[in-house]
Image (cartoon, rainbow, N blue to C red):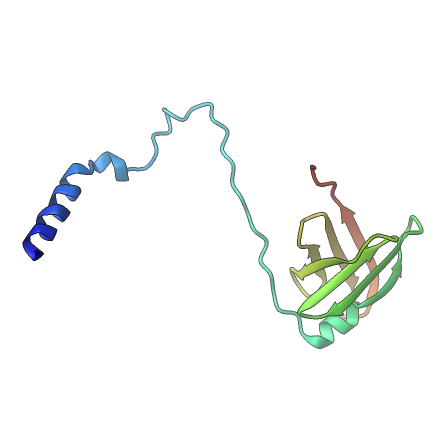
Length: 125
């Protein structure tokens, strides 16, 4: 049995041409748009850092914004919308899990928050 397995492995290895393992040919793929997916890195935020940004905010357009929850499971609510699970990108940047909302807190070097920037993105249905 061992001999049959070794023979089968040798036949499979011989049947696979080196071209099957080569890099894609750039000329053959000319004109095909290339897409690069980048994922933002999620970081751990300390309790003190999260406490510094957690709270209620009023945006320039009068909309209400609230960041609540726990440091491991932050939740944001914009206007009267439903709470959205968030992930921490840094101690002062958070993003909705579905990518529809990004929040950046503007903080002084001493850690005091003096502003917040909220960016909404409409998701395709």
